Image (cartoon, rainbow, N blue to C red; front, side, top):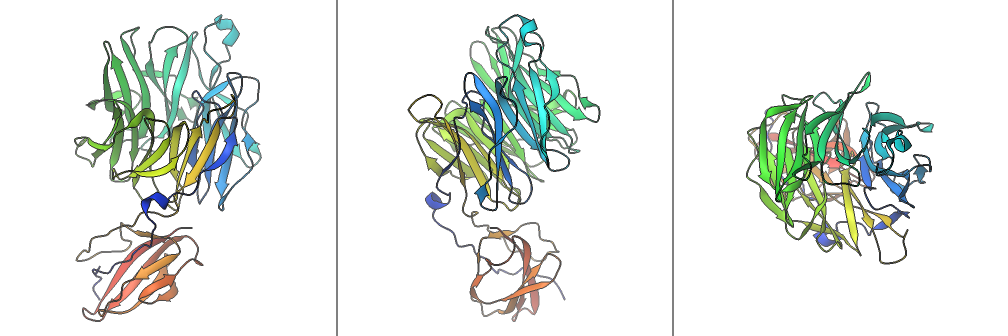
Length: 457
């Protein structure tokens, strides 16, 4: 029997865009501000970690807590109180555990011997807690890092980029790179050098490469104020084949088939897609954007999500697949948004809220998308299982009434029948989140259609 995909729709019931995100909740108070997060990290299932630096004189310790089973767990202190910390970054290690990097130190403007321990360190969350911090990159005399970011290579190994600046004096910012090997972190490699009071390179971002280990994007400022974004291929050094755009503060993300780039030009957020034939002409995603306050991620189903703060610093907004934006929250003086998807495609957003009031009242706020946008799939003359796309549902599966359809059933990924489906509303809220298939037999065409659906919480 031939397998056909009919013009058979599986629809998602969803709310208007303004009601798609939960009411913001405070998950931490007394948070730091400069280079202190928050950072979100998905770690399997519905678990999402938030990492930030506690506020204080300069900044305090790195803290973290995770969201699972619809609630936030107790805050954990990652580092000691003894030194100011900044620039937290997070990625999953090879075992799926949270792996953090951060800078331990302050501006190196004193005698170098007084800050010989200031450096980039890492730590891992194990079943017994956070491991003692391990040295990743020592700082060279009078320099300090900013914008520390992790990225996965084509072979899934971990790379790290950061900006490196001189403390307390004129600009000479350079983009640095290192990768984690079985023998530890490789020595720093300068990818984009700065030049005193003339050239500044910063805001680097990493994603897996195609024929090389990574794509890397970074900003370059050149006197008298020309800003450009460079996207290059990277092994242990840059490889030929870069693309250049007018703008700054780039962010990279990718799905299996596409690579995504966002960057800002003045207060405009632009995006470009690379489907394997080079970077397309950028399109406008939004205007009235706060430059630098942009986060970009790909979700569990290959969609790309951008999150940013408006230029007034009050509204947190998102956009998926470069579509028009939607509002997450409107609050007083917000910044530093971060967005991530859990394994089931549920989107989480966190940001720093700095209400007008006494020092130390900065809060980390969080919201998650109640449902996913509806997914439209085009009919095709034939298909093989599993289908490459899916419809995402949450609680209710709606099948249109059709005289062509004899009967429909829902099957698990292993091929076991889960339940019979009827035209109209089907309650699937009791089922476990995961991937299922709708199998429909057609009376008119004597054929069978299979359609993949993903049930989320």
